[in-house]
Length: 49
Image 1 (spheres, rainbow, N blue to C red):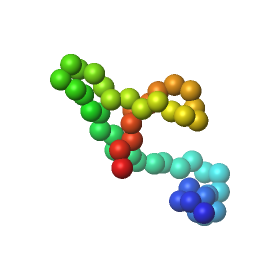
Image 2: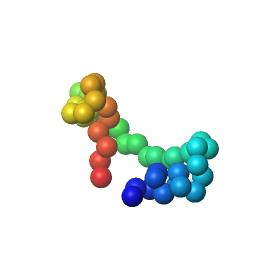
Image 3: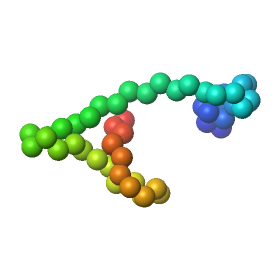
Image 4: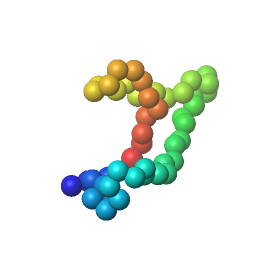
């Protein structure tokens, strides 16, 4: 069971607040690194581990 599922068992349907950090990688031409999603259409910022 994942983190969110564990929280849901405790707090039910009350809103959850998640904090995340994002890094935007820009090359020398000013382009931003994007990730093409396989399961969802569109593109997103790449999440680096």
